[in-house]
Length: 253
Image (cartoon, rainbow, N blue to C red):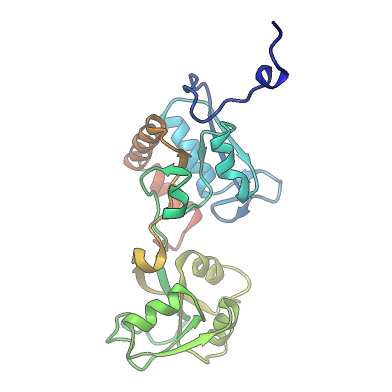
């Protein structure tokens, strides 16, 4: 008896038994430099892209890294159109409802930036007492300095860009923001070489998230374990450190 067309063309479901993997298929986006982006020649590159390839080398498996819109990444896992997502996802409770994550491979800290040649403040609550700190209003970075740097003069601005302009115009002494974006700004053309990172990183999951991780399909414990082991070996080999220095020369982490 002929089978209904819907059965003949049925797509694999996430609950079906996994087929033997012959290539590790990562998906990412191309709009999040320096993590995942296209260079001037249109070649996909970035920290996450190179990390995915390093993982494949450790697993001795061919690697495919392709681009999808952000909102389609998790769906590609559910439909078995991809094995893993490496696009800069932070582990959150809402994300865990639809995917599982590897161990965190990177934490994004808060950092201070100040003008080049300005006094080197001791970057502590006591050391910054009375110091003017600029932050973007309504952000977790504003909440952090309000909670822990109560002796400082907190100046809140409508946007990250306005806070940076205030620093360039000496209206504030320091700004506090995401370490990655500050690193890109201080080393980019928009800052006009005015400013530099000051002090060390501040890690606080309550304010700055729980770190970046690779997403896999829900309950794919085998792949999650493989990726965790590969990440461990990438670190042990020194390759992870090489990638950090290549894409984040000022060591924002």
